[in-house]
Length: 113
Length: 111
Image (spheres, rainbow over the protein chains, first blue to last red):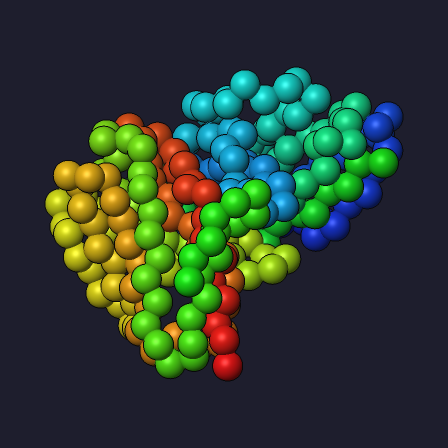
């Protein structure tokens, strides 16, 4: 199984809502990532979890809150987002941070209204 | 031909021709590089990787070349097919901590 599964595929939320994005992998990977991708741009790193601990936070606003409940799951909790946060949110995993092939999920298309 | 501007750089090639997509990476501390293909509405898909102790690696119809002296990476696609139309990103792993993506190139295959 070389899949990274993200749910939901699409999400529309208001600026006062609280929602969560979910990501799951069963490859035994110990590094998991959240990326944000705007149209016609490359994915931009948000967070890296290494062995279930947050190792990199790329100065992401606190309205984005990551969580790694176990080695297979990664969540991104969203609260009080702005319309400019609308983007494709991608989850990825690899054997270790920055090592081994990084597998990406299909992403969650988020629209903030 | 290739164009650069406010939009993604675009490379247009005739079906059956070979494609060469280039990428300049930024960090000399990076020791692992990946090429990804991203189709519309999908996540990036792994194509091929190369470690810094190599200068060439071949896969099925694809070859990656690495020139560490000038920090340059290229992806060659042989006999380009319509299904190869997508955006291609190179990614590097500065200090082995994460993956940083280049700006991307849109490959358009003409019939």
